Amino acid sequence: GAGEGVGVAQIEAQMEAQKEAQKEAQMEWRPEFYFLGKKLWSKGYRELLSLLDSPEARKAQADGSMPTLHFHGSGPDETAIVAEAKRTGVDVSHFPAIDHANDALREYPVFVNPSTSDVLCTATAEAVAMGKMVLIIEHPSNEFFYQFNNCHTFK
Image 1: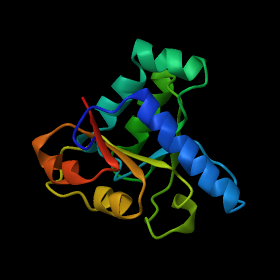
Image 2: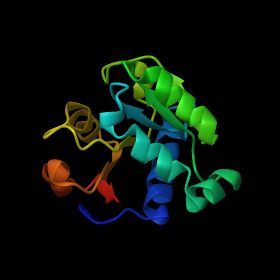
Image 3: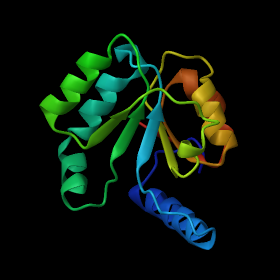
Image 4: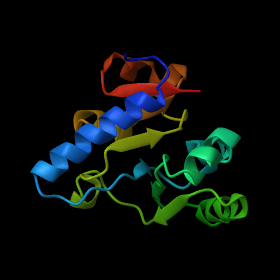
């Protein structure tokens, strides 16, 4: 439920539901997760890269059960964030800044936001409103979002 830690089964069920809906709409299935945010370390990139570098995430990446995470954004720390992702070898892709209104983001089933720097993050609010599965870090700055069924937390 909302506010509880998210499990792999919940993610898989959401992805399967999204896949079926997209099949019906004759859309190409894109299993990737995405993060939309300014490329600043303070937005949680270091923590997210660290999570993706964990043994559990490495195993899931190796067996194909963990989708690629797409980072959409630009900013002062972009070069360092890209370099750190390359150094660790985690499965992420980098894309320029984009707005949630852009059609390119509509196909993503899951929005991930590791940031704790915003009291009420606009990108998270938009993803919730779009019906995405939203994964946010468990933190007081994100408590407002716990009430939504499509919002789940991680530590």
